[in-house]
Amino acid sequence: MNIGIVIPCYNRVDSLNRLLVSLEGANYIGEEVDLIFSIDYSGINNIRYLAESFQWEFGSKKIILHPSNIGLKQNILSCGDLVDEYDAVIVLEDDLYVAKDFYNYAKQAAYYYLNNDNIAGISLFSYKYTEIGFYQFYPFQDNYDTFFIQWPSSWGQLWTKRQWHSFRSWLSLNKSLEDINIPASVKLWTHSWKKFYIAYMIDLDKYFVYPYVSFTNDFGSSGVHHTNQSNICTTSLFFGINKKYLFRDFDKSSIYVYDCFFQMRKRNLILNDREYDVCFDLYSTKDVCNIDTNYVITSKTIKKPIISFASIHIPFEYNILTNEGGGFFYLTTKNEYKKQSLAILKKETLRMKMYVPDMIKYVCYKIWRKIFK
Image (cartoon, rainbow, N blue to C red; front, side):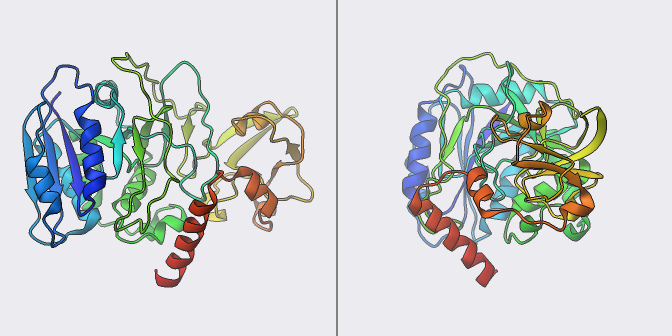
């Protein structure tokens, strides 16, 4: 399998240099690997000079110079289109840092899921929080190295030719996102390729493969979508090398498959000798239109819940699967659910712990989006 590594870049010289240092030290399992720079026009030549002077010893180096500013969305799309020249591409934005074994993991994963039409891509990044609301995220874990989320990765990802062409075919249909049940907050995103990829995955019921440990780290360096350095997305990096990874087969009914809200997929549960068709909304980030079951398990305060659960176990869902009694999560009807709201103290319990400067930046960013978007 011929895999190219492509870097969409714009004007972040220091960040790009850091990524290149990590790429130089990575393990390419003795293979020749092309490195492609896709440089968006910025009016300055620092990025071009760095790309031209960089010595890539593991294969060919290619530089694509866009003559006008196309923006991050179009740059990412053009990077994905390079699958026409390769069997797969690994896309690395310029504020990332890679683990030594990132290529080995990516190639093994690409082979394993090559012909699985449920899979829309391979993530190199591992989330420790939900991207909607920044709540703590603890996926169920066993002996396998991967699980699945109906959410695309933008902090290091691999697309095979088949996966990318499927997305491009869907995108050409120009479907209205208003007709697809994506999270309301995602619909507000502007200049985002990811918004359309989320809609594609939901519309065709596809999933990204995620590792439990991260093969990339995101530093959120100052740029078009980050006005200041942020450590919100920084996570621990995998330091193993030459590992033989154990990949999980896709089974939509398993506890290792999560929806676009980073919640376990809807399922039928037997609780107190009765069966319920249940949608999980433990972070209370879903709207009523996102719920297509008769019952909901939520952290909203419900005055007369059918069953109450504790929050002592991690993953949070384990409290429900073991019917651990308590007063944090509640089983209720869909009709009762839509009347309630999430209590502030519960939000703080569930939310990812941030450093104060990062929290201030995040709040200011949310306010800015509401005012100017």
